[in-house]
Image (cartoon, rainbow, N blue to C red; front, side, top):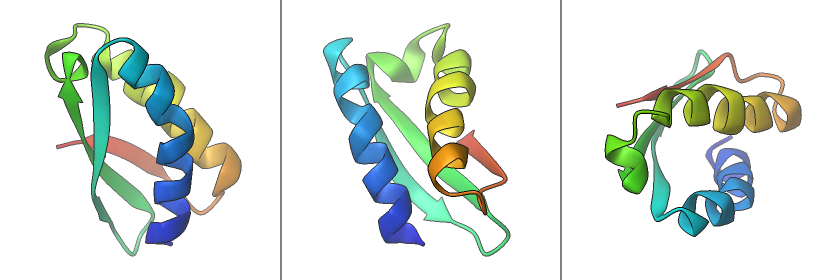
Length: 73
């Protein structure tokens, strides 16, 4: 599962990096929760919650239906 999550993150990383940000995978829990750390410009951006939910989480759920939620830690 972790490899599949990393593959999806690798697809969204270029968009984040274009704005000076990034994302690191922290943990994938057995109940389908993906924990990530937003880095760079994304770490302190007021739009980071929207990026997390509408960007990263949406892409993750489309490719890996078992994922229930993506949260920032």
